Length: 471
Image 1 (cartoon, rainbow, N blue to C red):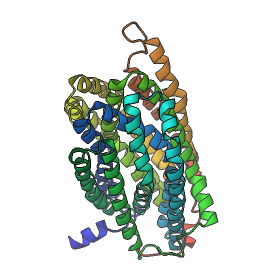
Image 2: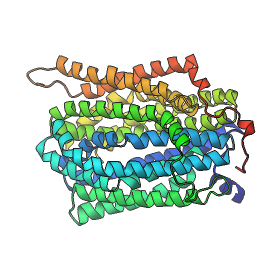
Image 3: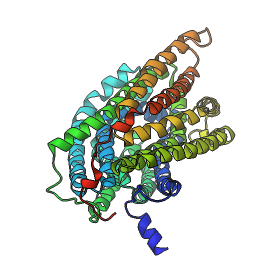
Image 4: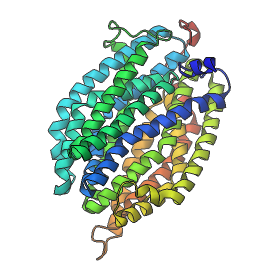
């Protein structure tokens, strides 16, 4: 038992052993961690919805498209670094692995300073551009500006925990996340209900908790001396590695930017329906965040598994792992859809006491639920391609689904469903358009996966020539 626990708490080499066991052992802690991560946002939403009101709930929801837009640089750096870390780990290249981690830590600091400066300057203009209702605008701006103050904590937790996961360590980030999530919930209630700070209290709770989790992850990384070196001499910009991170991460950053811009444009449509629909969309997106966690988890699992095996030159194992991942992902998604249809209304009731809002949110959630199996295919195959070093193809697929399919379809359906009773169209079209984009995206992803160009994108060409370390 002691040996097994010790192995579980260290970086996991996924290039050897049973594929099913490796995928399961890595994915379970990662899935729990992703669910706990969602509790940060959900806790804010639940607490302000219960103790402040539906307008405050809508304010938190209206903030996320803007926040996601400003996090694109972090997304790019983390994606590029994750691909490189997993492949260098699989190739047993300690020197390049250590330099990549040091460069990533430095990049995260530079980007954090940029966001702290830019974020507060554009928050209110963007909110007004999106036709945000006046009763939502001020608390939404306050929420965002506080998050920008503490953005480095959010960046470093996600960046360093991503590095740890790329080396196969999904347990320690989970442990740290559980601790700080509990603190976040306690501080949410304390600041919002106890001190009466409203939406601002929820933001401060999130910032403090994320800073604590980032410090814990950094300490964990620094102690992994058997795998890599973390010291001040390595925490600097390496031009070659920065270029490689940028090359691999830029498509992901561009994808996130396009996705966020499309969200902002769709959010403008959502805002035109009024506060009750904004609140409904907020609730559905929070539940959707949890429902998507298995798919996002398998995406990260496949990226790590494939990255390590590409680095080790084991392409046959990559194919076997992808098939196993698809079976696991589709099975979980099927059970998830059944759970949403059965228990969905109770989930909506956690966020609000308003009966109209509960019924509307459940109806919208039922529409979305049928797209989760499609998203399982998209996320798993995209994870395979990214892990192999092909970050461009998933970028183009996201561009097609978000901009060419989802966004125009939402506005078209809104226009087609206008009537005397629904002057701006029926609100269901927001989620019908998203469902259609998910389904078409799965078919497009499958097509490009089968073409196989992603197999040629590995950054490690001669794994046998690298320096070995004890994994």
